[in-house]
Length: 88
Image (cartoon, rainbow, N blue to C red; front, side, top):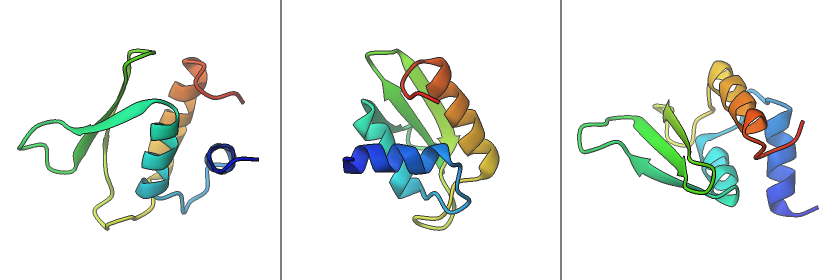
């Protein structure tokens, strides 16, 4: 099992300690690009997948490399499933 597959499998379990850095790696492996929403975006970030046209806007955690909130992980999981980017 590759590192990408392991990270996706870990994400699917919705762990409480899934970090923003892990999320960035996983989404990059799925074809997403990270961008800030502008100079005044603060902690808001945008992940864009040009192939699927999916855009994910979210807040990054205030602590560097901190865990992602459970509600954000659930929404993201459902988005990725519904857009056939990962399987259940």
